[in-house]
Image 1 (cartoon, rainbow, N blue to C red):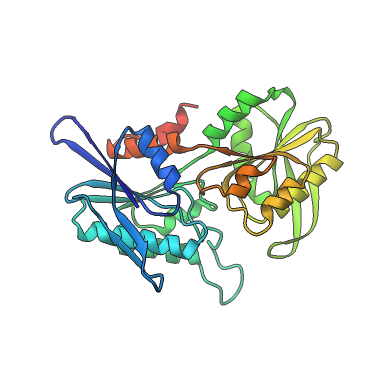
Image 2: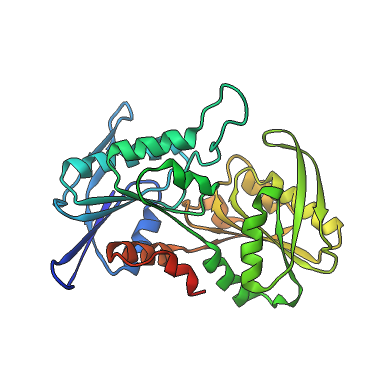
Length: 328
């Protein structure tokens, strides 16, 4: 765990900020601290022999504005529990305001009841974060926008699109680019990115046998002669992306790239994508990349510390966070 502090002179009282990181993605927290030019102070976040989590803060946080950076990716339950205990420790240490900065919000895919006798786990997680003592939440590309409504505290959902758009414009000639949604549910996300680069869109319509298993996929739209960019919020097993790439290439696409915010990439996903027809898969470091991801021939990591750092700074200064996205 890392605690970072900054003091800024302003009108009236001095603005005081502290940034706390759990073990969920410490390199990202350190990169954000560097962006904000903050001094790092050590704390303790470790496990007892039976794997219970122990937290001890070595810095005074009384009356401070504290931001806890902790994505709840794999191991999801450990990282979630760590976040809750960190928030509780800060609350009991009399922090003035606690913001849970969750670059990746785990359990977001369980945002509704798909059948009888099933939980809405995203709502449960929201309840737990609130009850632990968080005053607000800052997250990135929620799987479902309605999750913001699961909280009764202010919740800012940032978008990775501006970072992706900059990268696309820097690397590609846009005249033959087409943005593709890998499923019908992602059309809004694909359209938003396509609008930023003035590109047409297409849709891959998939039919599932069951969760995680695709029966068939067809392309809606003319992709012949186009360089296709698949856009989504999460890549987990990689099956949907690999199948979409095959279908697009068969439909006449020149090449297929993918821009995904959260690279979960569980199980054999890295090997599957490395062996696929995807020329390039770009993921952000909202989830800490594994060594296998870094070594893969066609996987590239896009840093988001600048985006999150600016959002934290604006939140601390009581400035508009949505204004971040009007600049692009």
